Length: 355
Image (cartoon, rainbow, N blue to C red; front, side, top):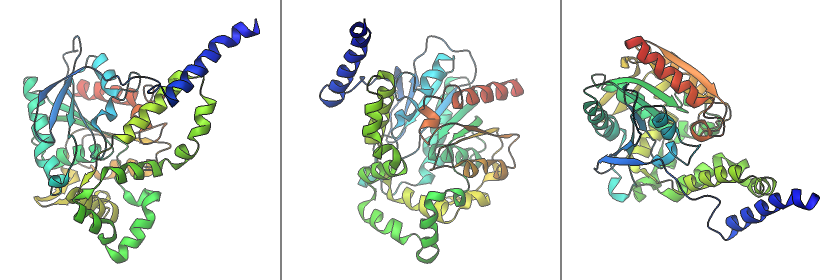
């Protein structure tokens, strides 16, 4: 009897060990079916396929730079995109593709003034001029908020910012950079990246792994403890693939991150300077949902909660916390019951208020 009881577990252990070592991985890559409806440099637009929609407002997913667009669609069970489509939402995704040396001059302006507004207009027209609800993760939330504030004539219905820091003084892990920057400015951070045309993908990937150093150091033990649990290993594998796919930052964009956000902390002061002029956060006039992660070291809860202080022109700014790390907020094992549920409730409430 004991041999019979142990046999399935032993088979699973053996199979998972083989797949991790020699067999090409625990689970194949599976993305939610989608159709590209517009193609242009750094602004490909996809619509996630769904059998039918609820007839409500469309949703546009806005990823950050230096992260693959499939951050919203890692795999079944780790896909906010699939959740939205399965809920009857007409869900769209803006995909920037890879960044090269020729893109070194791209900055926040290109996304705030061009790429995101064009996508919003395109999606809105497909739905008879309906407002578009933006959902951005990390710097995707920053760009969504700045677009809504700086281009408040756009048909934007609301903005959800997931893991998006507003007050960078509350981000403990960058405190040393801010301290050094008081004396040196942005030069130590940006001199090399200007020469290279940006922050290369390998450095971005290494930086992200550093923020999850404990995960990386304990990974062998984690695998050993969960070798019998195929689903847990598949989740781990999807995160590893995500980190390996991270592209780089264009030089200008990275410099703006350093000068405006990290060193200047301008969002907390209520503004953001671009070469096309200054954006005042108080000019944002749509409802906002800000979600912070209890284990997020990149965007700690106080840095995210600061959104409630700066978007004074918004009819409502709602803050919610959720369990998880920076990526875990979007695609962690508890995201469906926390982050995704907060988004569902927020979007339903916004639609009800405007009906």
